[in-house]
Structure formats: structure tokens, C-alpha cells
Length: 253
Image (tube, rainbow, N blue to C red; front, side, top):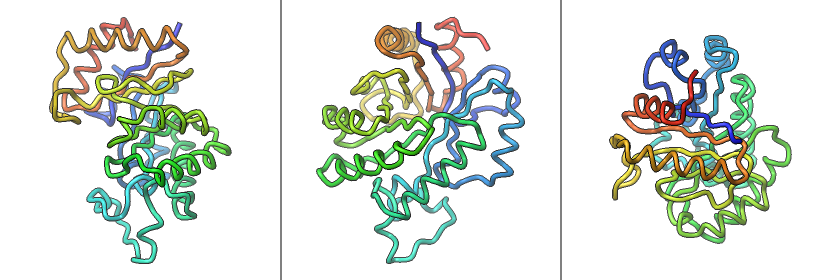
């Protein structure tokens, strides 16, 4: 029987309140700018011992310096290095950035690192090869589970995603209302970004019917190979939506 873990992408309420109602959170700050080691250690100390952190990988690995989100990084990249960062390029700079995000995971005692690539990182032969080389090299030496959430035209090429997963040993992270995982392994990682034609739709509030459908999907994954299913809400109403879904699953913290 699979274990179901429900949480939010970021803290939608105060940490003290959140710790009372949830046992899982995905840290978002690590995508924009790496927190100090002191800050990370404080977060770990503030949380209950059995509380689980997952983290979103630093944008230096996934997004090029031309991305608007880089403004929050506080880092200025010289022109000669601009093509060395992002898009899972197998460069010294990206591997150094990966080592830094592993240090974050170590301090938080996290076991899963979420790697979200942008829509501009579409499926191409170059990006396909870069993904295989980058993930193969980091997965070979890491103790952490890598959950890759590709966007853009990758979503129309699930067989290629499956090939990357099979060759590298990572897992496929999805929004289950958009796609099922290309391969269901021992761990399933779901991120819910709202619904409707305009996706992601972060202002969406999940209906009772939506959550009932989500439960069916979650139980389906659990009846397959999955031993753990992570369900992370990433919408404006994520705190209440996650509580409603926990109740639907019969989960109590």
C-alpha cells in the first residue's frame, strides 16, 4: 500500500501554523536565490523532527540568465558565461550549481530535488542529449532523488521523457490534470498548478469534483508501482485545497 504525502509549494501561512497541519512542504526560495546555511539550519530546527522538506532546484541549472526570474538571484553573469548556465547544459558552471543545491538538500535533510525546466527548454535533439548527459552525471553520484518537471513541447513527447528517465534513473514530475507520469516508479511526484485552458492557472480553486478526480488518479498510481505518492499544491488556494484533499484521503498529521 502506497503512502500518500500532501503539502504545498512554499509556506502559504506562517511556518508555526503550517507545521501543525502538514508534514511536507516544497521549498520555493531555493529556485530564485539560495538561502544562507544559517537560514536553512533554522528552518530545519523549527520544523518537527518527522517533517519533510523537498526543494526546487536553483534556476541557474534550468533557466538561462536571460530569464526574468534571474533578477531575483542577485547574481550578475558576465557575457562570456551566459551560455554556460541553464537548460541542463553539461557545463562546469551547471554542475557547480548542482553541488550547491545538494548542500541545501543536505542541510534540510531533504531527499527529493525538483528540477523544473521552462517552456523555452523545448524538446529538441540538443536538449534531449543535454538532459541525458546532465541527469546521468549527477544521478550517478547523488544520494538524492531527482524529480524532473519538463514543460513546453516535452509534454507532447512522453516517449522521449520516458527514455530520459530510463537512461538516467530520475523520476517524472507532472501535474496529473495535464499528463500522467511517463513512467510510474516507486516514487510519484505531483505538482498541481491549477486547471482550465490557460495553464498554469495559479488562481484556480479546486472543486470537490476536481479533488475526487485527483483522489482516483492518486490511488491509481498507488496501485501500480508507487510506494510513495507526493501531492504538492501550487495555487493561490493551496493551503485550504491541500487540507481538503488530506481530509478526502483520510490523512491526519
